[in-house]
Image (cartoon, rainbow, N blue to C red; front, side, top):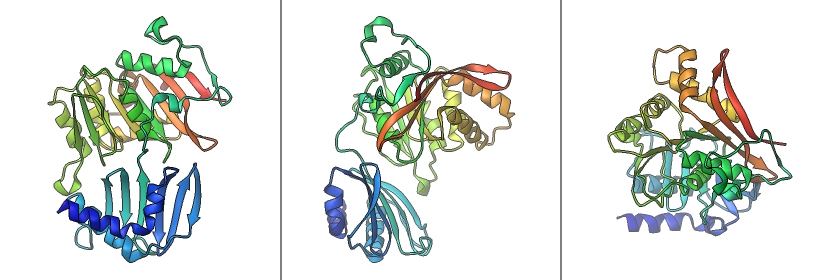
Length: 331
């Protein structure tokens, strides 16, 4: 059945095939009837490709079937799923007012490493001198890479923040590559995107149709003997449960979230904890965040290239403010 559906999808996507096969194209956006845009080299451009709203609708239905979901007036008009090396978000007409809309994000064909995100000397300057906790053994590394290696080695809880399409998921994959293969990983995602090379891992995906949320999965994860917990994107009340896990002996956790800066990521996390319904004052939530989160890596675009643009170490709270040390900052 899936083989037949996959062939149907390739047929529907035939007009988009050159774009899907082009390694320089990162995203394909269908805004409606024959309105196709792409992102190439960090820049957006419209391309003269015919792709009708009907074809988009057929593709959405096939993708829903492949992911065991249903879309339509009686089920839902939104779809967020993965297929092959693509993550696809879709909105059906009439919610998409100019015809069925698609946004196809292609996972990178090659596996990136942390090194690919390191700041160039001309773009970055050290805010303070920071010695990596692992000592002289990694002093030969790029200073930012040395800090990250120290955080991973010493099982620090780290957030990866950034705006849309700044490479948070790909960078998270790169960090996971640094984990020792002796550790057991539990990976939680809203839509499956991460590629895990570790020999001992289990991955969970939220499934709204079965009433399984990211928060449900974070709670369930604690019964799966994790050495490290990775949350593909923290976006709601699961932030509270993740902090509770960190606060009860589960060190070395990673997660991504949308934020405008590294410090803003800490405040965004406060808001997400409040969404859990916990009746704590914001000051108590902030104190727990400062106790649990050790560092934040913020990503952005520099001349069209995704890079680390801010790196802070969280050192507690004082007089109602987060105490952070800026290790590297965009110059």
